[in-house]
Structure formats: C-alpha cells, structure tokens
Length: 143
Image: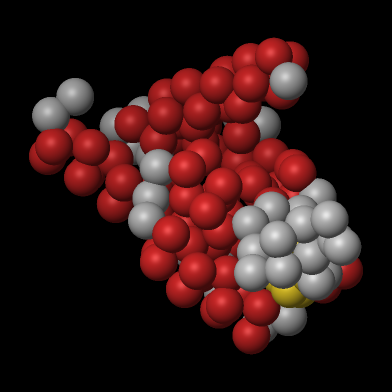
C-alpha cells in the first residue's frame, strides 16, 4: 500500500473508533497499548516499544498518561529484577475500560452489512478490521 492509502485508512479507522466509543476518551494508540499490557499481565516500556515498533519515549508518554488517568499502575520490580526497570499493569478501572471498548468494537465487528456500510461507505475499515481480527486470532493460537 502506498502512504496516501495508509494515511486515509488510519484517518478512517480513527474516525470509526471515535464514533463507536462516543464518550470514552481513549485514542486507538492508548487502546492498543492497554491491550498489549493486558495480554502479558505486566509489561515494561522497552518490551512494549519493541512489540509495537514505536519509540520507548512514545510508549513512556502514553503509559504516564494512562497512569495519570488511573488506567495503569506502576509496579515495583521483583527482588530478582533490575530495580531500574519499570513495569505497568492495568488497574481494575483500566480492565473495566478495556472490556467496555472491546465490547463496543465487537458490536461493530458483528454489525449486519447495512449498518456497517453506514459507518464505512467504501468498505475500507471493515476490510481492515477483518484483516486485524485474523492477525489477532492467528497470533493468539500461535502463543
């Protein structure tokens, strides 16, 4: 895909994400970060950055914002761990929010064709969601 196509797809996905979530103030980047941390139970910014292929600084900023909003909790390292390493985990409020967002996304994913096309007139987002869902499902089975 060329850059312009990816840019349009990203913009459309952001628009859909924001319209589906309504009052939930969460960016798609924060949602992805919360999902990665939830999957592992606890995670440090360096490993998150490697998994998401983004800078550690970007991960740290997002983690601090989620911690400020009480969706993330900073954990003290175990005795055998390096004390300089920071770990994050979801708080109960973070888990509730993630479950809510996953439910809303699942509702969109399972919409009937007519409703889905009202949100996505050119089918771009629906195709992308199906590709991402396949990737997530494949990744879960591989783990």
